Amino acid sequence: MHNPADPELTPARAPFGELFTPHMVTARWQQGEDWSRPHLAPFADLPMSPAMVGLHYGQVVFEGLKGYRRPGGGVDLFRPLDHAARLRRSAERLAMPVLPDTLFQDAVELLVSADQASLPQAPGLSLYLRPLLFADEANLALRPARSYTFLLIAFVTGGFFSDRPDPVTVFVSRDYTRAAPGGTGGVKFAGNYAPAYLAQEQAVSAGCHQVVWLDPVERRWVEELGGMNLFFVRGHGADAELVTPPAVGTLLPGITRDSLMTLAGRQGIAVREEPIAVDQWRQESLDGTLTETFAAGTAAVVTPVGTVRDGDQEWRIGDGTAGPVTLALRDALVDVHTGRAAAPAGWLHRVAPALAPVTA
Image 1 (cartoon, rainbow, N blue to C red):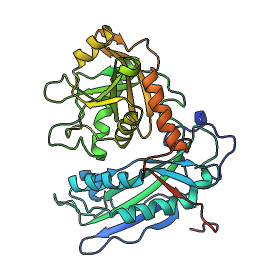
Image 2 (image 1 turned 180 degrees about the horizontal axis):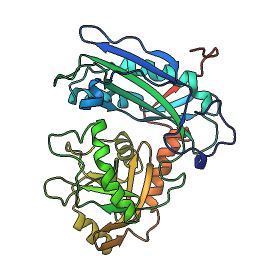
Image 3 (image 1 turned 60 degrees about the vertical axis):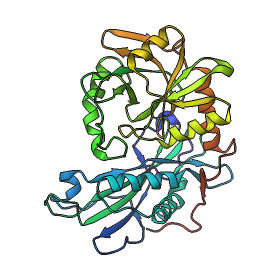
């Protein structure tokens, strides 16, 4: 727990997912009733039945979004309504009641207004919000639950890998796949994540930071990096173009992904969605056609890929360092996050601090 803001807190001392703020917000839904209003309470353990549906059958979806401190006061949330929309799509896929956008927004404002003092002014720190929707009915019948809880918590964090854009080494998984056609790969379903742990352990054993997922049918088309979207840069300078695998249902259509495609267009960089085979990735890297690769996500922001390991093959991307397009797009995104550059309409939502001390 981290409260109040520690002026000496640095990104290096703010590991992802540990420094939780003092409050949480909850709302409940029961069949035949509307959602309850969001309720602010101290961060605390949750009471639950041993027969809770989400615990047994995995009816659980979530989101992840960030807020950034403003020097003049308040916190800017990055694209909260887009996260609300994706939570709705995830809930629909899991046969769960959708959370209205207005309730999502109210919950986010309630928590951020109460807890934003936990976020210091230090550069590189952000407030990560985790909205979670789970089935809480105590009934083990094989059907969608009839009652659900929405939960919102937050924590202060630095970068997912590093506060600086240090290149990572990645591992192509040949033993496992992340998602299947018609499955849940395109939504933020809790069950997508634990099955990735074994492949991630393989990656770490191979001296790598993250897993590259291939398509589940042919096992040749590059899809994602861990839980992040991948981008490839072909060419140099004014001739550079940005390519990313199409979001066809087995990979998550990331909000950071969409943001970078928009920002690249503003910089005059051509953007295309195109399937890329892993062998093509290797060959184009070796012959210099493909000059940069990076991953993008809410937690990781923009992280360059320096080296790829695929079985007994290994290749370097460019000179193994962060390339100019990667750095330019990262800077453009961070400048929007931090208010140094104008954001496209609707991307930022300002939350003011609570006017009175929070007593919940």
